Length: 263
Image (cartoon, rainbow, N blue to C red; front, side):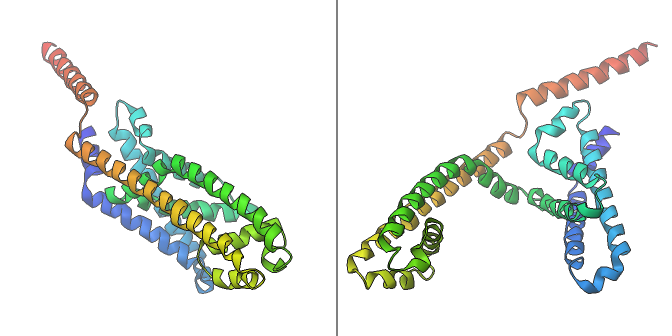
């Protein structure tokens, strides 16, 4: 029985079926936004229930397949995500919480992220990059803070539309960081003093060319680490602890068989 469950879970056809179900859920979410299909509410709702049922069956099979160590199921981050989506989907939300219920349905589509190892690696790269990205974000925030105050004092009187207050200065700097329309912003203040161009050049060099490239470098480095971890997992798919656990299970089965034969 247990072997059959594991065989189903590891079967590529089963995984492809779940992927199709997720895509069906995505299609239903799109149809719900089209006024014409609002008359098919009960039909679409029945599809949502069917999709949720498939998710529950999938989780049930995975939990059963982890017998007798059910806790192993929750050691996988993707399984925790799937289980959380199921629990949230089962909450009796209605009335004023209808929008929340629809957003929870939207979360079901995130299951696509663990349908392939390549996509999983991309997500894991982003997750592993978060601590480093926080430091870069703090550095960028400090840069925005300093340049916003400087821009307010230097250009507030010349161009109050873009530099009239600290929030406006920050928003203008964000526009400059994207390199969108920054020449027009710069030309207004450089007409008053050509040396003001140094302000814009220094911000673009530090903010766009240095800090953003550091951000990209962190993503690339974490991506390399994630793929290296995947390669190590492929080379060493089974750990010593897992082998010992399997041996104990086999020994337990043999002991049970011997006791039956003895009777």
